[in-house]
Length: 349
Length: 170
Image (cartoon, rainbow over all chains, first blue to last red; front, side, top):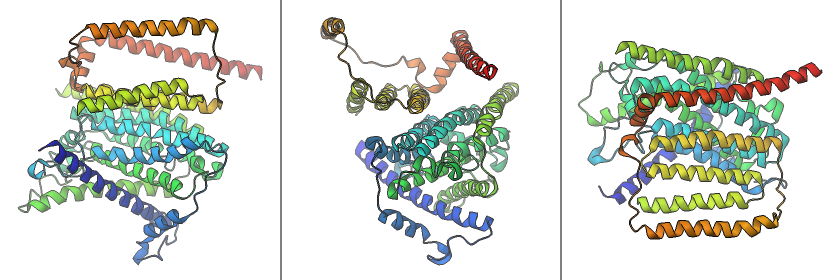
């Protein structure tokens, strides 16, 4: 396989994954409006298309056609750079996520993963940590006190919870002995549901730490203080309008999807079936290739639904509660989990 | 392929470093430093040190520089006044820089075969790196972490002391 074929193939994969991801983002927004609507005992969008299914298209058209206002006193270079950074970082990290069985590779072309990196998990964490700049710079360059407050809160929150997030994943990395996401999934593939890290690996404490830290990392309820409407108007994106606002919006949902993908890969066995080998490999190769994707999407959908469910159920935390919770409870618990997992691994040997 | 990437990112690194010095606004300088850190990470990656590259991004670009920008934002630092500097600095500085550059240039020109730069074979992958850190260099590694812990404790106690005085003043 020459290098040019490889480049061409990669570009094709990037295009497909980006289109799929952005479509998923649009429909997650619809899902959220629908589910939160039902939680609040109303219908949600229902007029455009059957069951309101074409609502994302109309929303997109609306955002494109709105007037793009740039306030006079913003610091323009960073004001324009911030949404690009936010969405760029949100989209890049999906590149290392394996969606389906990577061994399905006709003629050496891996179909279900853009790039199989040795340090896949670290790439995701690194890019997420760069994504903070999008929000921080947006708030600062807007020259607005609500924006600045929102972005200060957000930077502090993201730095604090990144520690708990990273440490909660260490246990899984120790069990798998690798940072490669494909290897981590394969280490959970043996007995279906029973060998997933959350059950068979006894990583349920780590899973709940990860889940809470991830909600804080993506600025979602109950930790959505950077954009708390009742105090900060809209937080860091108060001064953004039209597509620039939509860029932040898309970045938030893309981050949600990435976080759900990582949760699936790390704790819920990625693309592997929960039934293990009970429904073994089929005769038809196409079903064998598609079925893992089905399981993966189902698990990611579950996490997205959980996000929305939590948003519809829990009230927002106070800021000092958020910081106390992160530093006093989540972080020590994550460290204890690492100690416990290493003891268990040492005794098992 | 490697050479092209090296030239691109080494250039980016130098451009970021120059921009860091020339920018008037602190936040632009901080962001230029982020560019420098990130391009350094790519250079590490080209040398095959993948873990080092990821650590560089997560620790420096993702955490330390975020704190820098955080502080700049919090203090609302404005534009820096540009001064011409002292006469002595100009008189001594330029010849000194020229001399250092000349020395480095002669050394590089004299050495005919510079060879290729690579990390030693033993410590490229994450697994090998951790083996070195936790077996052969365990004691220095742990001592360093204790050192950092002491620094953290010192910072916390200093911060708490100031806080306590305020409360007493009320």
